[in-house]
Image 1 (tube, rainbow, N blue to C red):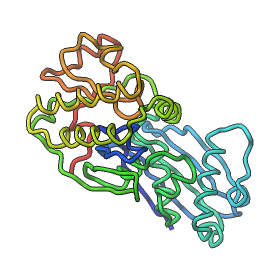
Image 2: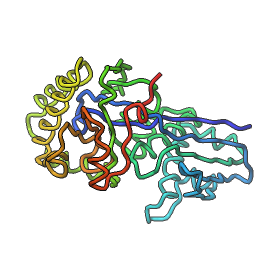
Image 3: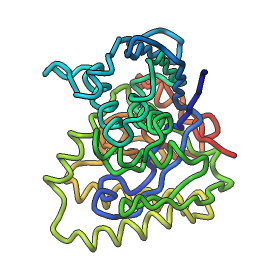
Image 4: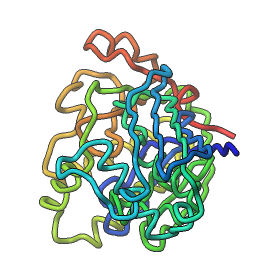
Length: 304
């Protein structure tokens, strides 16, 4: 019997880094995501194939049930060793999906390029959790780690406020008139979240409670902005606030200082997508600088 599971991608609008210490995060699920198709197999093995958004096979492996149960893999980290580790942690949480099966044939299908950073790993983990009937936040914590906001986006079809304590998720409304002035630009570089988090932990200030309070104030100003100018001011304030904590320049200062508008890093600073707020379509500006992947709000964000 064939079963199909699907999870949304994500964009971290505000609260990045500080979410790890309890701050409010504002995030948006994307129209892009990943599915996982499970069919019955045999011989106590999992035949796994992963396809990219062009339906091109980018990974395949045969994994024995024994490898999953005992977490058997090479010492060199590869896609296969990472997958075995995730499946092993899923087995620890609910061994029945292995114990009561003869084998599996599994395929995954992305609807976005893998280098976009919209949640290749988080959508996979949430899909595996759905399939194996376990808690996705627990599976994330036991395998990859992280705040869990991406799992919350994978599971929700509306904007959310997320807090790491008890994996709190609050669906919220964000549908202002100025979404036509919001764009997302890919920086041609996939950022390493683990490295970015390490940098944050090394640089965050000692007055954490004050920083979190300021983040929450700004985050809710971003969420509740009534006009484009209010939204842009709140976003700029967020960039300055986090720039001071990380002790690094904002992406606009580094690469786009002459841009007539607002630019905000999303998630790990220095890569993946940035959010651009502009009264005019910014496509020509960014294309001239070599950034050709520019999506409008309507093209990127899931809207019910």
